[in-house]
Length: 95
Image (spheres, rainbow, N blue to C red):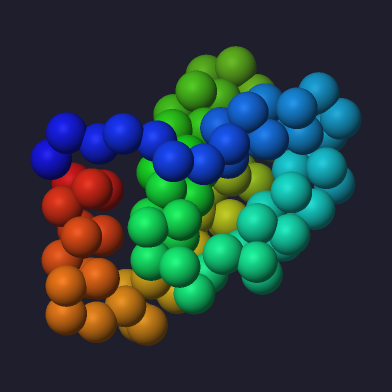
């Protein structure tokens, strides 16, 4: 699947990273609360969180751990709540 971004999540988390763990969590909480019912936005949130785990794995383990925790929340929600074509879209985009 050739994925094209439709949100500013990556930029939002880049800004949050400059302000620490509480800003990262706050950014996630606001994005997740607002967009968890939109399968495309939810999918993109999961993708961005996954990338940030990878980006910080060797540079900042604390951030990597936080991003992993947030990714698990969003991924679990997606897997347990998306159905049919929405879930297929999610799996295609996150594969």
